[in-house]
Length: 363
Image: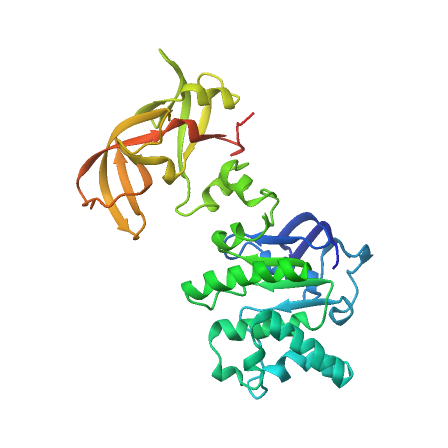
């Protein structure tokens, strides 16, 4: 296991700065994810840790040793790629043992390490097969096995599930989590998929948007970027301002509708007339009558613009007095486009952000 520290790490291509002073302390045995939209620089950060990209500024430490100028082969890291990077003419055993053979490791030790890794990954019966004879999930496990046999200080995963279908992604997500629980190594995992990021680990956004545990990022986003990125469907975000009503503070959305904040106003630092961004997650909007007991709700009439039946839920795009609100509705009722339905907004689960800084106003 190895610790990894990034101190004000910057990456530039000419005058273009693509990674902006990232700071992170990753403890031994921790599983951390770099998550963000495509093109945000997360794979570039991983490649700098691996030594495949030069660091333009700042320091990289692995096990308290400065690594900026250390060759990739001397960093004791192993990387698993999206494309598997298996040798097609070699069987599973030969692919997994390739690096050990390059290091002239004794044959008995190679056999032992490969067999141990194969047992962990469920590959013991596949050691004689070529990559072309394997499924996508099996190929990815071989790539993981090739990394495991090296016993590195740090595992680097660069979007390893992107080439798999939905069912295999779910399966491999769980297998990676179980693997980490067994080998307890330090893992840095890059993905653009926030579902992957929420499953095993502590996510980290490369531009210091927010670092924290998955459910904290989901329930208490620090800014509108995290609020709109973590969660599927993403949080509804609408510009508005705080107003005083007969029942306390409310939020007026684009001069079209005023929602009473009720007791949730006590969770935020608010002033009358303050410009805000109002947020509510789709799962906190439901059809009237199906709200949770005791919830502080605001009832409204919503026109169905588009509905997306997904089996266990229906994602519905409602138009409420000119405001678009996306709801994740648990119902067997078929909601037709153009219909009007009574909906309830759970006002005890709202989020408010400063309109200028986009930072949360939560106390």
